[in-house]
Amino acid sequence: MKNKKTADLSLTGSLWFKKSGQDFLGSSRIQLLEKVGELGSITKAGKAVGISYKTAWEQVEMLNNLSDQPLVIKQTGGRGGGGTRLTEAGKEVIHRYRLIQKEHERFLRSIGEHLEDGEGFYQFLRKVNMKVSARNIWSGEITQLEKGAINTLVTLKLKGGDCISSLITNESVESLDLALGEKVVAMAKAPAVMIVKELGAAQLSACNILRGTIQRIVEAQVDCEVTLELPGGNTVSATLTKASGQSLELREGEEAWAVVQESSVILGRV
Image 1 (cartoon, helix red, strand yellow):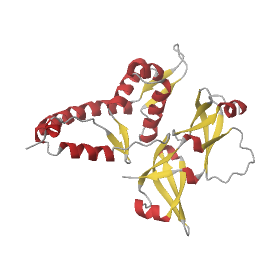
Image 2 (cartoon, helix red, strand yellow):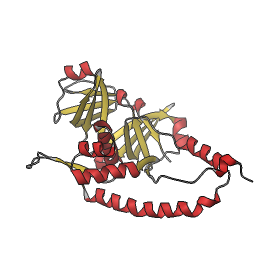
Image 3 (cartoon, rainbow, N blue to C red):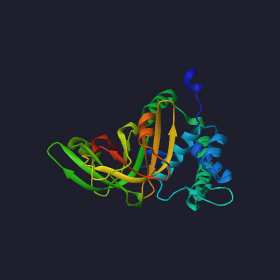
Image 4 (cartoon, one colour):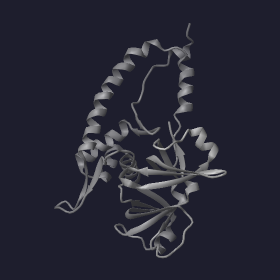
C-alpha cells in the first residue's frame, strides 16, 4: 500500500531538448522565440514573457551558440530602425517543439496512474537536474588532443569555424572518454574572460585570443558585461568592473579581443 505522501504525488513534466548534454530548448525559451517572431524585438519579447532585457539576450545568444544554424538574427536599417527576427530554422524549431510537446503530454497522461516510489524518483531527478552557472557555453567538436605528462590541451571547432582550447588533466580526458571527432560542451565563466581593445604586438600566454565585434555592453552599478560576436557567429561574454570598461572606451560595433586562459575553459559531455 502506498503511503499518503507518495499517493499525493502526481506526474507532470517539462519537455527539454538537450544538445551536447546541456538543456537547450524548453517551453520558456520557445515562448521567448515566439514573442521575438511576433514583436520583432528581443527586448519586447523578454518583457512579454516576464524576463529582463539581459536575460532575454543571454538566452538568445546561448540558443544561437548551441544551434547548428542561427535561430534569431539582427536586422539593421529600414523604417523601423532595425530589430530582430526569427530565421527559417527558428520557425522550424518552434513548429517541431509544439508537435513533440503534444505527444509528450499524451505520454505523461498514459503513465501517470502507474507511479511507484514516486518520492524516491523525485529525489533522483533533483540530483541529475543540475544547472551550469557558467555564462559562456559553446558546443563543438574535438579537432586536436595534445597530451603532456600531466595535462592535455583539447582544441574544439565551434560552429562557423571558431575555435577554443581547454587545458584539462589526462585523468579528465580518460574519465570523459574524449577522442577526436567527439562532440562536447565548453564552458567559461564571464569573470574569467578578459577584453582587450587594441592587441597590437602584445604577447599573451593564453591560447584563446578571440577576435570579435562588440555586440552588446550592459552596465550595472559596479560592473559591466561585454559580449563579443565572433566571426563564426558564436558569442563570448566578459564581466569587467565598470571603471575598466570605461577606461577601455568600449563601444558597440567596434572590434575587440576576448582572452581566455585555456585552464579556465571547462569541458563536459553526455
